[in-house]
Image 1 (cartoon, rainbow, N blue to C red):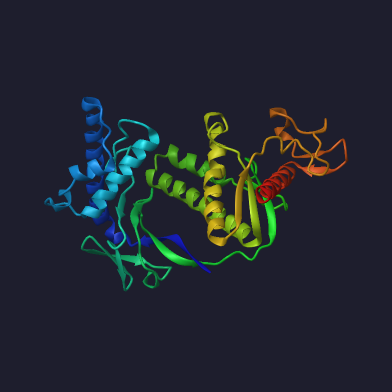
Image 2 (tube, rainbow, N blue to C red):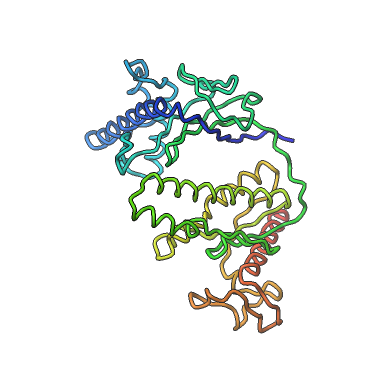
Amino acid sequence: MSPAIKTLKVRVKDKHASVLRRMARDVNQVYNFANETSSRAIRERGKWLSAYDLQKLTAGYSKCDGVTVGSGTVQLVCVEYATRRKQFKKARLNWRVSNPKSPKYSLGWIPFKGGQARYKAGQVEFAGMKFSLWDSYGLGKYELRSGSFNEDSRGRWYFNVAVEVQSKLSTGTASVGIDLGLKECATTSTGEKLVGRWYRENEQRLAKAQRARKKKRVKAIHAKIKNQRKDALHKFSTALVQKNAAIFVGDVSSQKLVKTKMAKITLDAGWAMFKTALEYKCRQAGVVFEVVNEAYTTQTCSSCGAMPETRPRGIAGLGIREWTCSDCGAVHDRDVNAAENILARGLASLAEGALA
C-alpha cells in the first residue's frame, strides 16, 4: 500500500445551483479581466504578463461589494489563464460567457485551494456558505486538498476534490498489448474488446431532439453519452491494471483523423481519455505502462514476424477483419494480431532498457 492522489467527484444538490452560478460569474469576470489586460499589455508594450503579474493586478477583487469568491480562487483563476494562454500560444483567449441563454455559454467553474473547502455532516463549507452533497464516498474520512466546483451541460453541479488515498499495488503478473481502433475502441492481445459506439447508439435520438429544438433534451443526451463513455473506459482500464504487471499501448493519435470524414467516430472512441486513465492507474498500482510505435503492426504476422502478400494494406484493407498469413498459415483477427505485435515490441523495449 502506498499513498496516491485521487480526485473524487460528488454531486451537489440542485438547490445550490443559483448560488454557484453567481460565484461562477465572479470567476468569469476575473478570467475576462486577465484576458483583456494581458492582450492589451502584449499589444501596447509587447509584454506577456505572468500569472504573478495578473495576481498583483487582481489583488483586492475578492473584497469588493457583491463578490462571492475568495482571494485563493482569484489567484487560481489567474494561474489557469496564464497556463492556457501558454498552452495555446495566443495573445487572447476566448471570453468566458456567463449568460446561460447564450450559445457560447461557458459551463460554471469555481476553483479552490487546499483548506478553502471543509466537509462536515454531509455538507461542504466554502466561501462562507454551506453546500449539501450526495456523498457516496464518505468525504469525512479524507483530508480535502485543492479542487473545483464544476457545472455539466444539464446544469448540474459537482464538487471535485483531490484527496490522498492508499493505493493498492496490482497483483497481476501478465503483460498485455492494446491496439486502439475505430470499430472497436480497444482490443487486447488476449482477445478482449471494448466496443466504443456511445455516440452512434444515441445519434438518432440526438438528431430527433435537435430537429425538435428541445435544448434540454439535447443537453441530457450529450451528458448521457459522456457518462457512458467515461464509465466504460474506467471499468475496462481498471480491469486491465488489476490483471497485468505491464501494459503497452500503440501510439495512434486522433489529431490527424479528426480533420477527416472520420472525425465523429474518432472522437467517439475516446483514445486520449483511455490512455490517460491507463497511465495514472498504472502509476498508482505500480504497473509498467509504455506507449510504443505501432507502425505496420496490423500488416506483420505475429506468429512468424513476416509481412506476407496476403496482409491487409492501406485504406482498401480496412474492411478486412480477418486474414491468413501466406508464409506460415496462421489465421489472424486483424486487431488482436496488431495488439500481439504491440506487446512484443513493448517487451523488447523493456528488455533493452533493463540491459542498458
